[in-house]
Length: 374
Image (tube, rainbow, N blue to C red; front, side):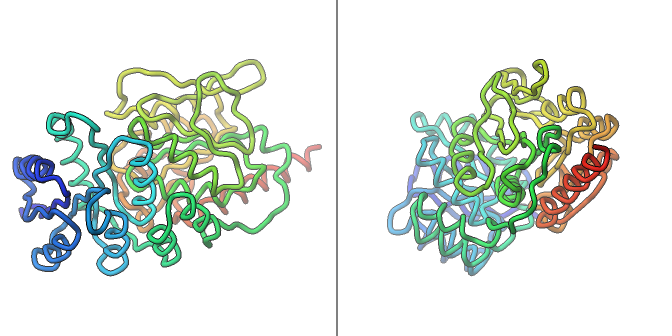
C-alpha cells in the first residue's frame, strides 16, 4: 500500500521538525518535504506532488491565506491548516475553510513542542481524512473576496455572493414555531452548514447545530454566519429558549441537546465524556431530538468522517422526524451521511445545494396542511 505523501509548510523550524517526525512515525504516511514559506512550498509541490499539505496560517513573505487562495485556484488539493488558538487565529481559520481547506489543527500559544506531540493523533487522523477528501474548488468570487480582504470585508463580500442570496418567499407561518431543524456535521461541515443556513428565510424554524469543532472556534464561526444569514446565528448557551428565526451552534468542547421547559424548548449545554470520540457529539443532539421533539423535528446530516449521530438519526426517523442526508458527490467526506443512510435514517439523500430548498418546500407543505385543517 502506498503511503500518503505530505508536505509541511511552517515558518518555525521547530514546528516543521515536530510535524515531520509525527507524520513519519505513521506506517501509512511520509513527510516528503518541509518548507519554511509558501515560495519554497510552491516548488516542493511542483516537484514532489504530495497528497496532502499542512499549512501554517501566519508566515513571512506570503501568509497562509494568500497561498491557499492561489493554490486552490490553480492546483486544488487537500490542505490541513495549522492555526494558533487565538481569536484572530479562529477568524483566519474560518476564511481558510471557506477557501477550501479540508480541516484545521489548533496549536497552543505556549508550549508548542509538547502541545503538538499531545495532538499527534489528531494531526495524523486529519491528514488521513484529508487524503481521502473530495476537494471542491471554491467559486472565483469567494477566492477573490477572502484573499483580498480582511475578515470583515471578506464576510461582507461573501454575503453578496450567489450562495448567500436566496429569493424572497412567502412566510412559513405557524409551522415555524412548531418545528426544529437539527444539523450534524464534521469535516467540511463549516461550509456545508453555511450553505444550508444562508438559504433559510428569516422566519425559519429554529436550527440547532452540532459541528465538530474545538473550543475557541465556534464563537467566531457563529459570528461569521450571523453576518451572512437572514436568521440570527449564535453560540448556544445553557438554558436559553430556542426561538424561530435563530440558529444555535454547540460550543466547542461541550455537548448540546434540546429539552422541554413547559411549552418551550430550551438548549442544554453540558460538559461530559466524549461520545463517539467527539465533544460536542451529533449523537447527543440527535438523541434529544428523537426523545423530546419527535415528529416536529427535521434532521440534516452533512459531510464528515465517521459514524457520529447515525444511530440517533435513525431514532429520530422512528420517532416521526423527516431526515435529509447530503449525497456523496457534494460531500468533502461522505462518512457520516453514508453511515446514517446505512442505518436506515434517511428519508431523502440530496446534493448540498438542494437541501435548503427541499426543506423549505416540506415546511411550506406543512404550513398549507395546517391552514387547511384550520
